[in-house]
Length: 325
Image (cartoon, rainbow, N blue to C red; front, side, top):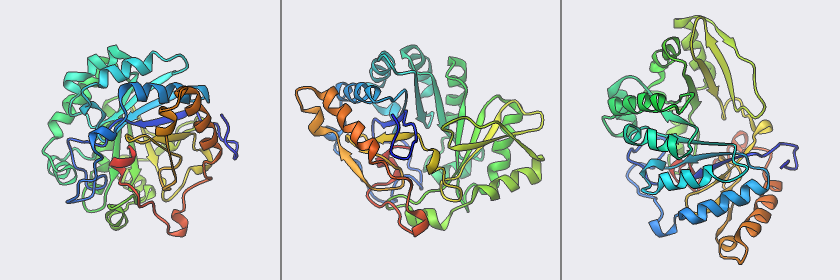
């Protein structure tokens, strides 16, 4: 479906939980627990109805996010049900990989296509400082398990945080010389309570790129695809590629093709704005899929042109974990 700005909205990022087994500094407020009661999270049946409705208005790609989606005990059932819906062309997941050694094969068998994995550094101490856990080896084992299970291509998400891992981006980029992976460097975004942390530790993508090129040589631009929010490059002789996601320094609002649903059942049209629509009344109607499809259609036409970061207005209602990464 096209929105009022001519953008084709065909991608839904669906958070299935706001729980996580890590506590990344840029994702969850330090010293606070803002998780919703479990009873307020959508059930498997409700998730399926929401996705069926979204497909009716043109959604074709679904990304499961969190929190950490693999913490749901019913995640395999969720994946199986969603992958079986006619019209869902691609079902993917963003994960911290902590449980992929056990779940990579079952997820692939249930119908998951591929994964994006959070890994901010190859330095164990820096990973611990950012996530609150000594988890580098476990995450790496999860990456290997995902690759062996065929959840390809592997994409690694690196949130660049000044004072923590801005010097580690070179070694992360070097991975593409050895593996056919996509390493994606993401600018820190001001969201919710951690917004003050983000603004104090922000690193622009241009700085990250210059740091990589100074050590590893020039980057060659890759062809862009419709709906891409990143700019892709390749090092000379690399098996994989590098991507830079720059929502602060180079906003991509004009080509945004997605909407979000939070774990507690609210449509969110822009990550960096607080406007939301509840799905619960539609879920309780006599024709939930039809009612929700009408709500999605209306909401998409209300999708704003972009964020208000340039005006100094930051979203404050939820941290990243409460929206879905």
